[in-house]
View 1: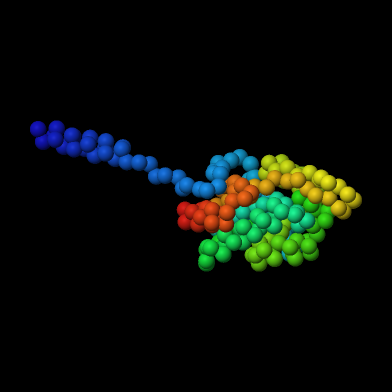
View 2: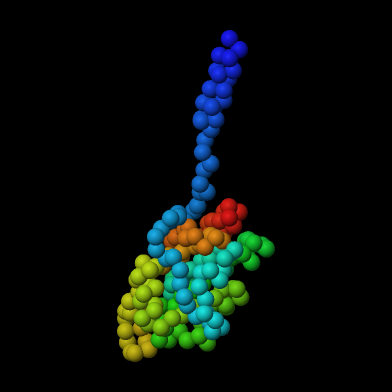
Length: 197
């Protein structure tokens, strides 16, 4: 009788344990693209002349945005929103790296990137590559860019993808932050990534 009672108790514990909810994946405001098989890495030169890849920022959440310095709206807004988000993180902001990759290597010289990008936040890095490297990178990152409203060789706009990719501190692609996301939402997602890594 005691054996049956013992088996019954063990079975009950197993059933109760089996009914426990599985740990929930973190809830994000942005689109969760964990496990995506693209945007795996980059090799670019930053505005200080240093060649960089994703591995250089291990231990930080990394946000990668493609744009250009002559952009009238999307690019400055996105950089401003990320700067405002970082201001909400306090000391954790040091564990976030924002990277602005130019899709306009013709006009966006290293000197111009060095003036433009850190004006939004001193830790932000502008990065560039030559035309063929940028084309390969665009395919890897599934982004598009195209000149429009060309008035002269150096006077044009560029239509481009407007989302921001965010990696966790282990270097895994986790989020696609859509254009127009509020600084509050961005800050919350960055906090979540930093606390779960």
